[in-house]
Image 1 (cartoon, helix red, strand yellow):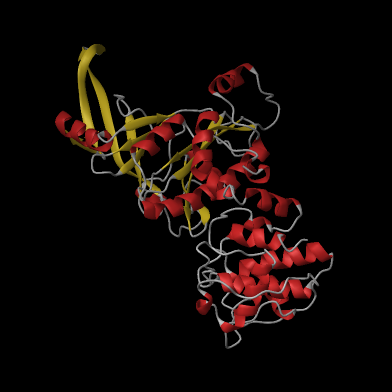
Image 2: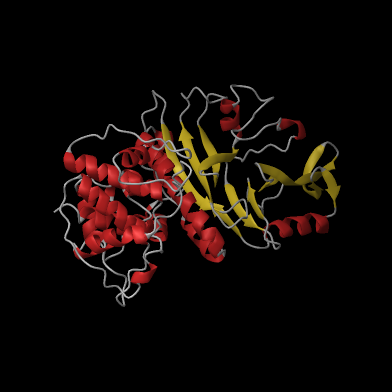
Length: 444
């Protein structure tokens, strides 16, 4: 994978790998999952550059013997998990950090851990859960009010806080498919165990279990024997009711999310998305050459098999032209439906035209005949000589009259080829890697 994209990645746990294998996503969710993974990459790269590599369990516990300098704020990443907690087939990012006692955000002057849960929606990450210390800091030192980004309203009135304990976290799946995060071991007794689920906006406590041991007394002395009182959501219930509720929350599987090493899961994540960052084998050498020559905008150095839009092809053409000639295009042509400067530049020099009524249709997929026309006009503008030729494709009749000369010249020059069986297929979309290959072939 290209170093600029995948130089560093934080961990996903082996537990996450098991869960992902157990609960596969649908094909419709796969595209969203890839988009989410790409957003997670960018965010985690920023975090690892800022904080360094995640520390492992033994380093974490050795912090208390001064393995890490303690005379200043220290923040380290303990764990990263990728798990579907919104139950929509697309995983969320769970990030756990360690903060020393000199952090200004610490409430009780002691060491602590911060947990944040992010989902991916509308093209960006949004925080949907965190632990109490994080919330206190984010609420500017106030317990009475906390409003996460993207959420409007008061949270604390119901006391079902969208906070996750920093002691330990369990990923639980109910028999009906609902997903929970538990803040303590679900099998613990004489503890309050809370199960958090996604309410459409935040992780919210939806089930609270309390098994309270009440000893028998001999006079005023508590005996070692006694009985348990069981509560569900603050209401006393029978033992059977208690365990029925608990089992309904964990019967689909329960995994502890431990502090983890990133190497095992790194390979899992790499295999899941590497095709997004790597061109097809037949295109890789020329794509690499084009990137090395500075001809490919950064935003087009991924998703190589995706269809390229009209605006994206203008970005590619502009960068190639300006890099190749060493001159910046100063002219502009205005369109009614885009202010993209690359579209305006290509329009001004006559390389592209609009689609009617002053519009350009920037997001429309580029067709093969449009690509041939733009390439031919770009070559003319840059004084790159193309061979003359005649059309001999079996589907010549499908090529629009305005594109025939350009297709003939571009194909005769070896810039664009047919698609097999002596056809040009003029109306199909053009991919990013095809666009990059043909651009660099103009560099003779």
